[in-house]
Image (cartoon, rainbow, N blue to C red):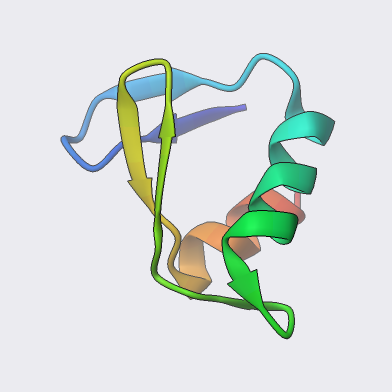
Length: 58
């Protein structure tokens, strides 16, 4: 899966299941995106409802 980071750069997620689990465990509240910032390998992502939906639908 390729996502756009906060700077508009493409970022390829290496392990999608691990990424999903991390986002769900640390960047959601009651199953909803909490607008926190996730950093991965120097790329930053604001966890919004639309980004969460995209991640979960992959």
